[in-house]
Length: 432
Image 1 (cartoon, helix red, strand yellow):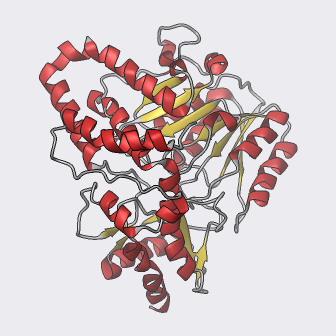
Image 2 (cartoon, one colour; image 1 turned 90 degrees about the vertical axis):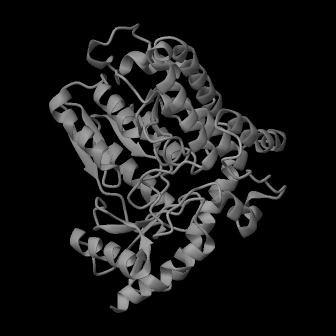
Image 3 (cartoon, helix red, strand yellow; image 1 turned 120 degrees about the vertical axis):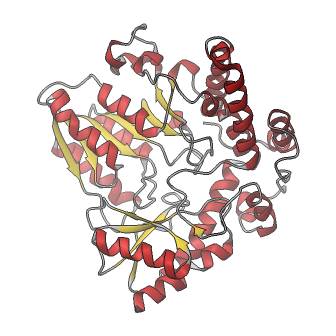
């Protein structure tokens, strides 16, 4: 996946993205997107002047410091303006457009996504989010028979855990759950999957999360996928939090089924997701409720009904904005913001940080818990106090086997000053 943008391409995007979008989305409504300085991403990560100009692209409430940006990523001003323009067009042209030119326009969206991901357009299926994409992949995976087994982990997304459990009724399989180790590192995560694959020779499919939503851990997908392949196990990859947050090559992961979110770290309108199925594997996912179409037609794997046309039409605008900044710069900045608060919080003996500092295993998101507070009620109270007393909006996460936690997720609009508020707040709450 060519997420890194070359200097010439980046310069072009920086100069043209704002102008191009403004022509669609009413020129003058968005601040000018700053040119990216010609420095390494790691050096750019600490350039507060540059990131203040990027932050100005977002309209954010002053009511609270929002460091809970994992639910979805708000649209930047040029993307929001494009979305308004697309909404106006769809509303004005109505079914005349939806039953006509939209069909050509959505193929252009597929082509743009295919170039971005370096895959074929007929390997992609637009959905309303990664959850829908993964439900299609998990529920439709037809290589299972009674007596087979499937596997998921405690750090997988709750809706996907439910989908995996449903396979016991749907396919008559045994559902196996593993708990991933705390503290986590690359080797013990790989070992956890390796032991499970060895212990259950009837395993045929496993759900693996790329960047998990509970703690923010980046899982070593390529190594896990290679192990799975050696045991004849298919991987369904939850990449909802990976696309747009970290730089990786989709084709190098060794997975054939992937659920993707475009309204998180890419910043497309809410309601934009994507399923990827490698072309020869499309028949291994059932057509949706006997949806008409060829066995290898990926579009027959879903029937959403009337969709938010404007949201999907805005995806190229979101990709333009994303690429104008560059995935290398985004990842470095987000990890820098994360490290600012984590570095200080680690000195607090009452606080347990749930991701390692290894840059291969963490980017923006990291969760913490107080060592003696692991229940849902206790962590709800912590999140409440952080908001009420310190003006910091976070979210409690339930799912890790060792107990609940609080997730902190900065976005590009957050500043170093926002991050500096976190560790003192955690210290104050520990003393309360």
